[in-house]
Picture 1 (cartoon, one colour):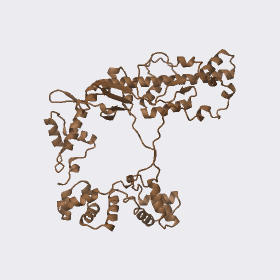
Picture 2 (tube, rainbow, N blue to C red):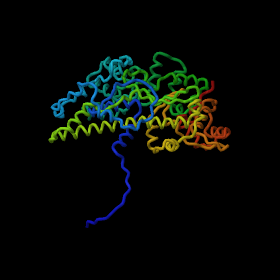
Picture 3 (cartoon, helix red, strand yellow):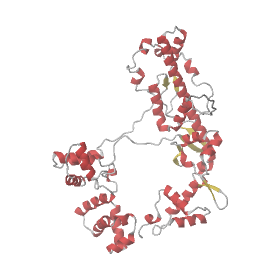
Picture 4 (tube, rainbow, N blue to C red):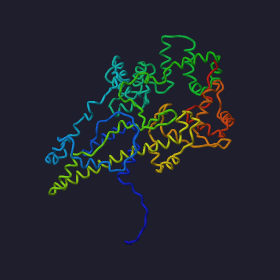
Length: 495
């Protein structure tokens, strides 16, 4: 039975402009240029000046309408004003002219191309070596399939049984397990040594067998025995067990370990891939120390000056003055939609730059002692709420700014969110950053006796002596966050 009722709800909805701003805030500097180019391609009413490579302090935001001048602009290149309405009404399958323009830069810009050497890739090298062996058609296909399943580190990611099944179902090749293993043994003889191993143990054994064909000495044979028979004890550094079971001295074990250390655990990485997939960190901010005064600049070299197309502004004015038929109304609606979208994007980029600058300025002032000295012990405890209260923004906004953004300082380039840390209280009541504790912990481990590395309990007691009362499980958590193994795995044999 239908029933009518009154309900009172409190809803909070984001406007399209706010959603756009939130998305742009998450974009780091190295992706902003691509995002702007994408918007220009999708919206012909949006134009941009040539990118200027410069770093300058971001000026305070202007509250005036960003695009008011662009809307009423009737100056500029007169060739832009010669717009034929017949061209506008062409079918949607026509390629817009702006998508055919690839050079949006002035000839005054200085372009410096990064040279890349050309060469052969890791998998191509393996295929070339496979072709040098006299294999029949079926074994050649098996070899090519095996190579396709070798990762960039040089390891075979599929078991022999799985490869047999794959060949039968995917390539209609009825191969036996013995056939695949024979071809795999051929591939394991390729360069670089160790390629084709199914795990670290097999990878090291392949390299040791290769060495034993040309060299013969006690340490090499002992290293082979250790890796083959006692690999689990070796990885866990149970050296006493190994020495007892093999009946060898510490000096003999050290010599064998030194042989193993000369091997390559990731043979595929020994070849440099000559691809253009290099990742460069482009800092969003730069902090400089000018005689004790910190100066902040927003790196806006890849944020071009955006404006609304004067052609579209003129077209809109002409359509507003003239008679409006159905086609003209549709054209007017389309142009207005594109111009509004361009305005929103321009305003969102402006607000993004302003928000980034204000937030980073608050972080710089909050951590002034650290940015002046570079000493981690001067880093104050800081959470997102601290900065959100200073700048008067929501915590989620500050989080978006801190995420994936980098700041260049006189002491290096750092991820912005690395400066945020919880606080802990020392014995004297002073609040310090957990990052300070991690730095002290890292230094203690770096200077420990590697023959008798400090356990987590010993590290806990040492920190307590320095005035940092933390539990053993907290020490273990910080150690794991620093990617430092337990004491047993840090142990090395005596010199």
